[in-house]
Length: 357
Image (cartoon, rainbow, N blue to C red; front, side, top):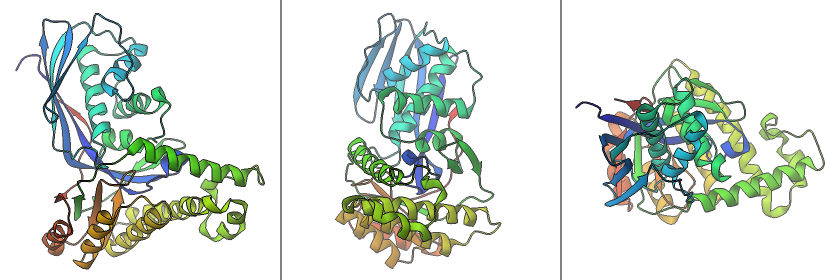
């Protein structure tokens, strides 16, 4: 249909590096085949009339009036950020938003919406920049984090915009992909909502307090350059209540580096990768305390059903898990996760990044 714009953005799962990117440490994440889809048609009202079908709500943004900033309203915040790039919204649209990403589940439905929305706005109105997946990711990060002085990192926006599996150095924004797609990924949705911003703010604050306690004794201390064997040297410099957080930061960083090497192999060792996932989850559970009894039961059930590894996804305190398993065990693992109380469990595969049609 003439002038119709369709913008899609995938969900993402963090495989390694949860609660690491806000410390400028690396992550390994992948986009998966669940999407937020925006379909937009021009109207004559000089408004963005937004229909949020999954929430059964509507919103109207009047393009002729100043945009009022509302916390966590990424649709309006996107208009404010794009206005700095010679973006001129001069045409109204009826915008229909729908998706099959579980909401508030740790799969970054909000970042997928932000990426898809920015992509639509740029196609509809253009900006004074060369458009690329990296630009879309950077703009989404500006909207969700920089504009609000938020606690999140860069993983969500860049993984969703670029797609597939990536290793990202969040300090330099250097990114590389891997030669093989990861198969056998199963998502288990606990149905428990999360307090994403609260959890991130709390844990980010504790992590930086611990790092700064070490830096007060060693001014050149850099958490990105130490390894697990040096924990005994630095841990006594951290207050007792922050030691679990500091330990998790160091050990999870080393786990992510080992996972990167495993993903770069020509043949993936699924058992080894699964074991690294288990190690990562143990630190998220025991040190950062971000699991729930239902999440723990789902993970235990997945492992007993034959999964190579399983871990919580996202900020925690609810949301989803991801389990890695062989093709032969996929149905067994899905059934086990559901039997453990999950709202849903389903197989996913890697996806390309955001698309504009």
